[in-house]
Length: 105
Image (cartoon, rainbow, N blue to C red; front, top):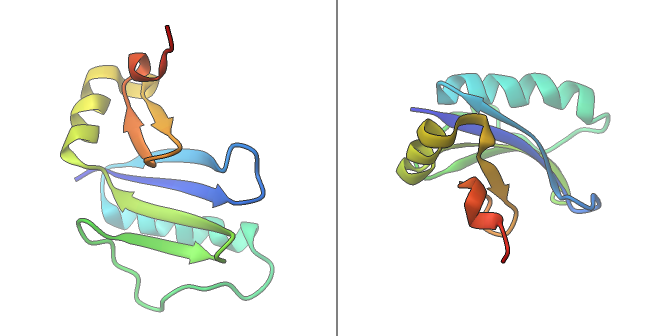
C-alpha cells in the first residue's frame, strides 16, 4: 500500500512541503525517522515503536512543526495512478487531488 510523507510548519507560508510517496508504510516511517535528525535539534515528540496503520498517521516533531507519514486513501491512489507526479496537494484537506480540481475559472 502506498504511503506519503510531508513536513508541516505552522510558521511557513505554504504550511506543507517535501511531499514524498513511498511504496510501503515502513519506508515512510524510516524516512521521517531519518529526516527528523536533521530537522530538529531539540528533543522532539516521537513514540518509541512507530508503526503506520491504515487510517492513522505517524508524526515526529512538535505541535507547530512536524514530519507526517500516512497511507494514501484508495481515491488518492487512483488519482496518482492516473496523473502521476502531476497530482497536487490540497492544503485544506491534506490530500492529493487532480490537477484540474484546483484550477479556477
